[in-house]
Length: 274
Image 1: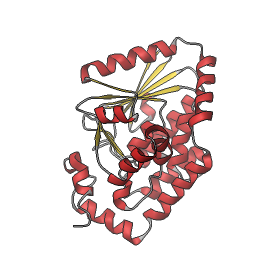
Image 2: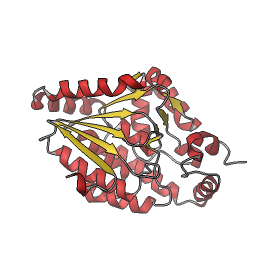
Image 3: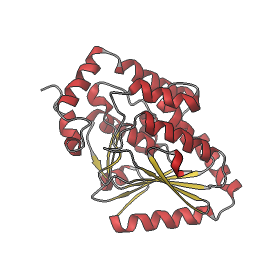
Image 4: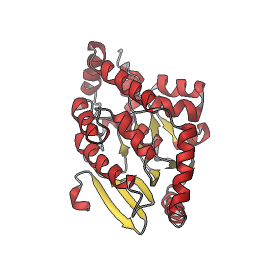
């Protein structure tokens, strides 16, 4: 099974599937990673043999950095293989609806669509001093296109959602935990043992009960398909405007989408008008 994936490393432990994102040079969400995520979601949709999926990263600096802004049309088209529409938002919403319980184990940077990916997982746990979160599309003049606004408003509240999306700043694990962005933060050495123990405990529970709980939580908290679609459309329309294209070019000229420069991406994005 692992040989079929270009950007993911898979390890099964009974009813738990560990999915490690491994898309050098910096785990950008491009067509290859989207193609592999489509295949994983199709597996998790079955509800067997895997009751739980844990997503983590092989890259010590990047969980999913963000989308590859040079391949927007290509990665959106890959999503259509599952959703029938060229939409990352609808793909991520399908992730939220899978029969398996999904857990994000975050030890690096999750910005833009990377943050939206983890928001569509059922639970999020992060390493203090390593995990970084950002919903940074506002720096380009864009609405988050993968469901970020839908989740952040519900999880953080109106004021903090505005702060996160309009600042386009980085947030560390401690503040993300305080805001309700993630479930909990841990010292790095304690994160993986906690996640593995939680996944193992969930995997012992009756699958029908876990699915019923997930269905009810989603019915209460998950925005409609139409709302996700609207965000996706706004992102796609905005990304084609001359102003946004110019800001993308400026950001790339200053190191955006280069591994070393993006360690401090908030500095790059905060200087696009200069």
